[in-house]
Length: 509
Ligand SMILES: *[C@@H]1O[C@H](CO)[C@@H](O)[C@H](O)[C@H]1NC(C)=O
Ligand SMILES: *[C@@H]1O[C@H](CO)[C@@H](O)[C@H](O)[C@H]1NC(C)=O
Ligand SMILES: *[C@@H]1O[C@H](CO)[C@@H](O)[C@H](O)[C@H]1NC(C)=O
Ligand SMILES: *[C@@H]1O[C@H](CO)[C@@H](O)[C@H](O)[C@H]1NC(C)=O
Image (cartoon, rainbow, N blue to C red):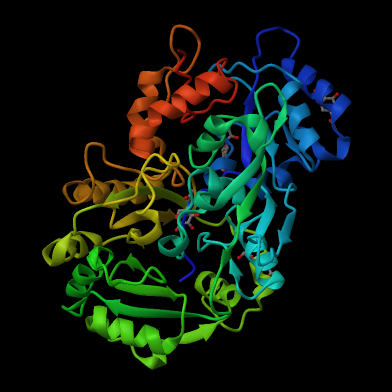
């Protein structure tokens, strides 16, 4: 099953006002064209505009004829283009104003340094590279190096890291941003900063505080993970809810994170849709030990040696996302998305086991008699995620979290018709049903699965994003870290230059 998490936040939206009679959009483009090569600049009326726009869009709802279009797209290929795009026009957004898109998809270099006995292996990776491109470069550089990224190869590195980033090796190596050791950021003044010049507060904030609030991160330096063995092991076992034992297996599975004897090397994530339940595992070790561990910890799943496959880490990441051993690993480099279906996602965190009766009731609700069922993906936490304090990065969902829940509904084929209402109705129905079973006060949500339904910013009397409006959604993504994020924003972007529906509001001291 080629499902996977995470919003692809490759684009930065720069707003600018249309207050004068001469169109500032024209002035803005004029100003940009003096600094940025014309082949990287796509005004709305240019021939390449639509294809560049759709290449960055991950959900067709952003392409309908009622969706606002940017006045122009800047497809930066180097950090100075990002600096120029930011500085070409001071931006102040009012609702309904024009805006430009800074598309980082062409800023995608990956450079691996394999390290030595005295120095850890690292990578510099540009924000516009995809996880698939990063995995491919790492896998080709060394069979024992890896990075704890997500399962979906088309997700952009910048978007992934901006929300924290979870995946199938999080229990062993932490969330994605736990491995970030440096970054290059263009701030609201157009300056290019690194860890030394940005200071530890900004460096803290960009590692999970959400994209598009503090600056444009053009590249990241990652500590790579060294594995003991050049092969890992995977399995993907399907069950159906018709088997009465499935709810019991789920109930046992969800308490595994509490079992001190569960190795950090083992992650079993679960995908549920309709009657189908898939248990998908990645184990940083061999089949023999995995079989032994499964017999000891979750015999109810009935995993056998026939389910077990050993392969390189790169092959495993390809197998998990593409579902096939026959596809060459080069498919990880494919950046093309099928934009056929619409999708809406929401998220939760579970801290108290749902239990067998809970899973039976979810399955009754979940097996909706009409329409496509909601997809649920459960991503285990514990291990290395939980050993780091909740304020070490903006990602607060650590000790005590059993797993993250991602909900997704798909529909075809227009943004606002009956199919859309029916699909989002099913999603919201399940989300409401889950409320007593998931975290509360606040009901936690994952910043990578942006959900505008949990709240949107309002502008205060001073023209800046109001702190109180941001708390509504922000404390669900960041909990106790939200206030510090707002304070950092107040320091590095007091004029609220980078803003959107869920950007961090500046808290001015
Ligand atoms: C929604 O979830 C699906 C399934 O995991 C994924 O393919 C898609 O990229 C997600 N979209 C967003 C915006 O997170
Ligand atoms: C696009 O519009 C600008 C002014 O808004 C104009 O100068 C330019 O010639 C137009 N380009 C095309 C290809 O129509
Ligand atoms: C938008 O597209 C739909 C069909 O694709 C069409 O019926 C409608 O007239 C369009 N609306 C506008 C404002 O162009
Ligand atoms: C790349 O992926 C897209 C979408 O899944 C698919 O349609 C296309 O055939 C793939 N291209 C190659 C060269 O594999």
